[in-house]
Image 1 (cartoon, rainbow, N blue to C red):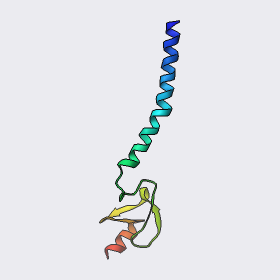
Image 2 (image 1 turned 180 degrees about the horizontal axis):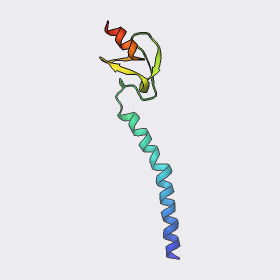
Image 3 (image 1 turned 60 degrees about the vertical axis):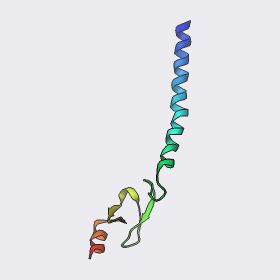
Image 4 (image 1 turned 90 degrees about the vertical axis):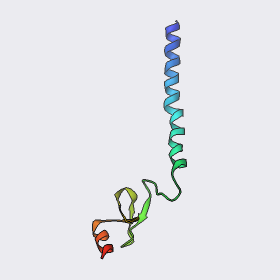
Length: 77
């Protein structure tokens, strides 16, 4: 009887941790990111040609975002 109660309590605790504790972890990175820094899924404009590309696919050179290596080379000319 006691073993069943402990097992049910453990299952309830695990479900609580899985669903309710993760929400506070997901919200914390937004609060810690500086306002100037773009997020991973944000679109940024290429400094050379003006095409918008996801930040994860961009090339960062001299503090500017570029959509391709060709744009980086053109900007250096």
